Image 1 (tube, rainbow, N blue to C red):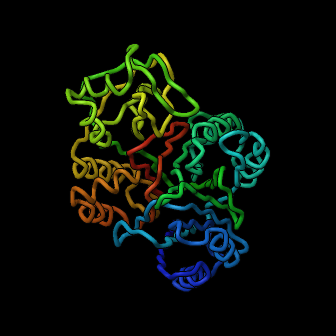
Image 2 (cartoon, rainbow, N blue to C red):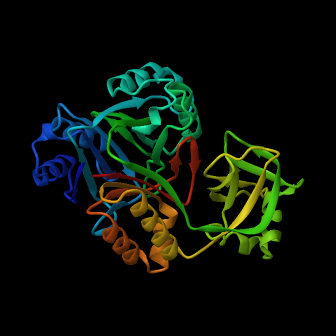
Image 3 (cartoon, rainbow, N blue to C red):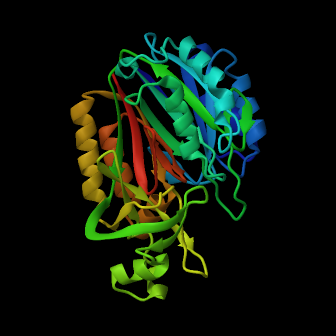
Length: 379
């Protein structure tokens, strides 16, 4: 398995595509797949077409970002393009439309792409030599719906998936994903990969339980909103648990997200804000009659060391690395002045890598926030 990573900061989509492809070392037809991650300042429709035009025989997927991740550091306003090449590996892409409402309309497209990649639907062993990459639009709260549809289609809950929610910067909430030049504003870009190479998909969580829990008595699953904990206004209970005033609690949401118990483990659901009637809006769904753990931030550098060590234990010789990290982590690392140290640790672990700051992360069928999801393929 080989990976190339190239970056462009050219102003126009066409110029960026030209520069990216000029910097690649191999012939366009030598790659199994091409992935690009772009700042929203670019004309994403044009960029998708321009990049695909340069790889007519290779599947190409892309997403907008809230920042880009490269061996040179955390970046903004650029396009990162990475490639996957290996003679024993197969990759196929598919675009899922209407992701937040009717992703089932793309069921046959998913099945065909899996078939083209020699991944059999309903095969309980399909996860042993195959996985999926997913980029999902981030405006319509459709991550859980898209994931549910995918797993209902492949019929193997053990099938591995590494995903990131497309991001954006600025005041206009708009994200894009694309497959082979076709763009969606409410869908998902999937890349299915079948390979004999060892691979590792994992999630890094920098938060620890506080031992303080709350019981959800009223929530809006579709709109990702909690109205009441233990029969009381959600904001009031959150502040009480933290031992601060409600106004102080508004400034503590990153350091103290919620942990949801899913499949026997805690998974982060980030707080998006508070409404005047003391409801809490979230970036992930929380169901009524469930218990949430209030979390607190730990040591990100220590967690990074643990993650890198675990990956090296699993994959002795990493050759390809894709990193999807939450934008809140990126901003927190900047505030803590540890961004360069995090990148140094990645550079010491991987020959090269690419990634982006996302608005959510997906590990298998679970959608989370404020985490890192990594995909690493070995020699």
